[in-house]
Length: 386
Image (cartoon, rainbow, N blue to C red; front, side, top):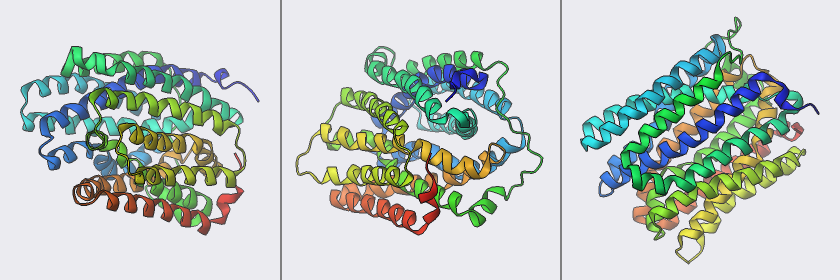
């Protein structure tokens, strides 16, 4: 198997991911914690902040997926990423005003631009993974990127206590530096055959694509909202700011371990069994009668492990049908489904937690069970052996 580092695009993306990983964690932790401090007595406002990313994805993902296939992906990524970095600095100044109107206005504008960048970036991640060295490539880029995220999560508490909202200025500067390494970046796009209906057409006619997208998107849609309401859950589980920062380091450390496990798995059936078991354990673990923030960290670890172990399986299933040409159009369907669930479930989870904690767990387990049924209903998925 050749080394993925012999491909220029992979080398550039891997180097860029160091800057992106560090700035992403600082941005997410600082932004969500500031919103939590400002609106902890107003769950509706806090919820309106944390669902912004998936909310915007619902409206833009499908169209941006089409654009990433139609036009130069590297240019779209570079421009949107640069604007997002600049707006992080503006957001820091907005938080200093303590005006909800100004904060939400700047925040929503930045999230809109950031999600355009992230949607193209998601396609970029898939496009830069060479098919003849995919498992190694996924391993290397995630070890490097997630190590950066672990370091960022580990030092976040120190940086936040020293900088507070000014930490977002650091986010903007680090994000901007990361763009320097993307000079001459080439990841395709410019398809003359792609249509706005391409993603839907693939979902209709290709069982493998449909099965992968539905099974993965629904399970992720029921798991990832936990990370959005993490400040609320940590408070419920009697955690602290330090635990909140530490949770990200744990999350990405487990993700790296799961990527190592992923490289050893080549049987699609076994991969899905491990994946779905991890998804179920995320919620089953929370049935424990003991209330401890460390129990929540363990549950979060299962989310992270499930996401890492399934990476190669999903990528192999999608790319075997679409190649690089129509990646954006198909992946946009997955983003759309996942984001729609995330937006709905953030509010539903918040409500259920205020009524009965057990209802929250039952709903989560039900969602994972739907993914399990979808896997059974798509036998072509058993043919994917990455």
